[in-house]
Length: 196
Ligand code: IMP
Image (cartoon, rainbow, N blue to C red; front, side, top):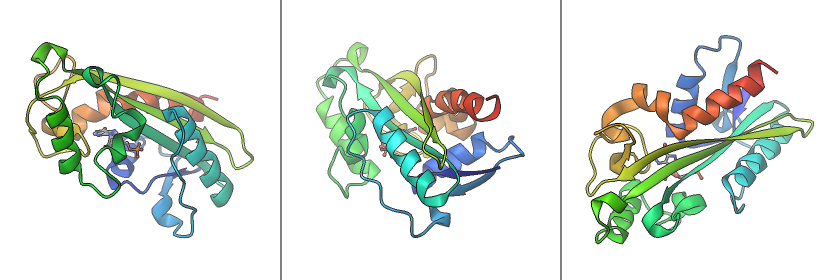
């Protein structure tokens, strides 16, 4: 079975590919295998809407079963920001380091016990004929005051998952791929994919 990952984000392709690697019957493709795939505009108001839009449009274009995801970081002290706008939080062409800098600056006066946050990930599975299903995974944690660690991507260096003392960027892929929002959503999506 061929499954297209509707993303160009190398960090996500790597994480999703590793998490699906024990599914021998699945051949993983990504948008890098379809250079003429349309650019999907992520203008939905929810992660679910964006994930479904990516999955259905790419499934229609490629003719293969497609997995689309959308994710973001919700910080309680910022009333849920950056949320669905996490990727563009510091502007369209900003780097991960610039997004982190903006986040830490916005939280500089927030005390340690009020720095709670969560990552959310919606995964949609779409068939070329148009049917789709969406699931959502959540990982609770908190935002620390400076970047720590070199693994992962995005806000990983400042996010400490609940029950741990290290950031996702310190814990590395093996731990992150067990407990992350994406891992949880993917476990639910796998049930949709492989158990009907
Ligand atoms: P999108 O899902 O491609 O729209 O991007 C969501 C954005 O949220 C990413 O660019 C990251 O900035 C952030 N994000 C989502 N998941 C993670 C994660 O697992 N670690 C760190 N940052 C993440």
